Image (tube, rainbow, N blue to C red; front, side):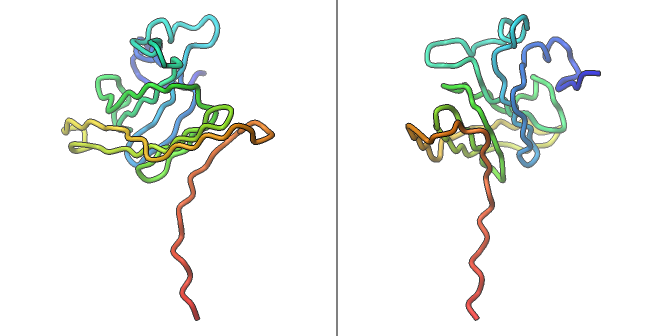
Length: 150
């Protein structure tokens, strides 16, 4: 059995999911070119223009995984090797060590009867040349308030 992202098989063929995160009431899917012999890249609109890697972030409401409910499509300049989400933030890492932190802003009511849209804004970007070993994973950690002095 194969796990399905969409109920509609034609929409599923447009997405080659490489990473998946929950972000509050949304699903963040990092979609990329189809593996050898796959049809996702050929059937996906955009993603192959100048300055893009063919990878993109797709934000969907978790109550309706359907391209008609797509909140945001954001092209990526490089293929990510790791992704994490927390609160309203998405952390992406690419080789050799490019780290980008995005903030998601949702306009409208994120309900089945609303007409929401989302926008990604780049908050921070870090680029390092050599870190020795290749990056395998990233994680966002919630900052805890300092302990009271006693």
